[in-house]
Image 1 (cartoon, rainbow, N blue to C red):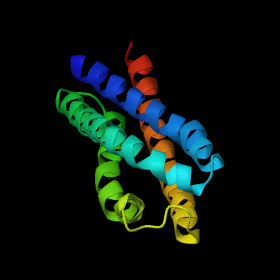
Image 2 (image 1 turned 135 degrees about the vertical axis):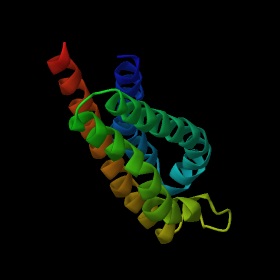
Image 3 (image 1 turned 120 degrees about the horizontal axis):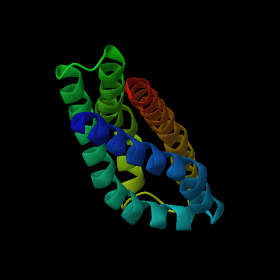
Amino acid sequence: MIFDLVALLCTGVFAGAAIYVTLVEHPARVECGTALAVAQFRPSYRRAAVMQATLAAAGCLAAIGAWAHGRGAVVLVAGLLLGALIPLTLAVIRPTTERLLDPALGPDSAEAAALLARWGDLHAVRSVAGGIAFVLLGLDLIRAL
């Protein structure tokens, strides 16, 4: 049961943070103008990346542990969905992120505005997937009680 709870906790915090960034933080930063959005994105991303990667890895491993200890396929699927966000982030979102972090990027340029919009759209995928994983784990845990 401990693996289930750790998986649910990590996935819930991951999903909550991702959804907050998608619905609140990123739109607010963009609303302040491109130059300010780029300036705020850099330290915010640096701090959030460590937290989100740790939560995704821990939640994935805990879900796999729960599955290995007899939990059903739903727990495994939710854990793998959460874990899949790590390579998705590295392969798909990272090029946009790295360009936004590049000091050579003109902070008030049309390219910066386009990159911010693209990053927001890509990050929304993480929010939805994290939310689905959380709901799957939560419903499965409720069913088991």
